[in-house]
Length: 316
Image 1 (cartoon, one colour):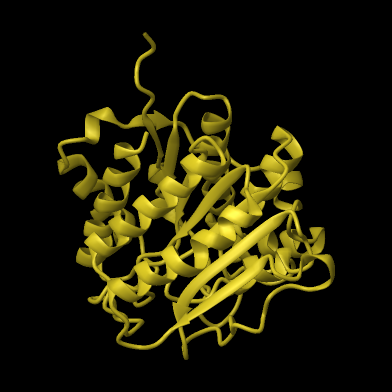
Image 2 (image 1 turned 180 degrees about the vertical axis):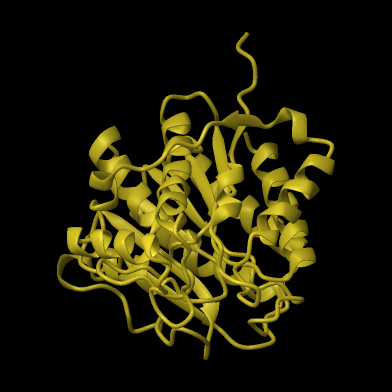
């Protein structure tokens, strides 16, 4: 009898070195409180630790143009901001490579059957980064690079990316908008930054229908999210039949978060995790990874991360 596989987990203390300044919501304390909360959980010792290693320049260019990657490196080395709310420090490029590399390593672990599923506690986040622009706290698009990595280096055919961050994942949508091999779903507050993600944004050319946006009204409750995932996302995913699921796991839809007006809870995120794990079990032998995006209230974020990881472990 084979032993039960585990949930993989990646984190690196160097993620704390990306210095965004004293007043930026995307700050190192976000990861510090999450690590403390996970270490205090009774399942901490049961997580399978995975070592983060940096993504290569070539891997960053799976979704970003070379000139953009070079520009980010140069601006970071000089400590220049990438846009008005995306500050950098001299080590930010290296940390961003390690952040992207963290999700690539958990993708490897799932594809080689070392773990059933996995979570990457990484920063900086990535889902706003487009092929040629860093924005919204994001340097490189971690989940998009992971999708391309799975396709190019592991031979995966169809990848689905599910983004429940309260802000629309405009960068991820842009990268795959004309690609029928990657399904992108986003449930996000409207109106809110960055102002994209309307229902009529469904893809282009042969990829029409592989982008699915579900705007959420301010004040939406967990039940509204659960309904959208069960009644809108699930049938679409079953029809797409992905070979791998990736979650852009932003927890800034939490009711305590200062940057939004949604009433999600840690229990609500746990329910969404259950739904996606069940879909993954039905469509792709449970192959699923998750990477941190937003979440800026420290209590709401840490409680939600613990709830999310606990449910991943329940489905491992």
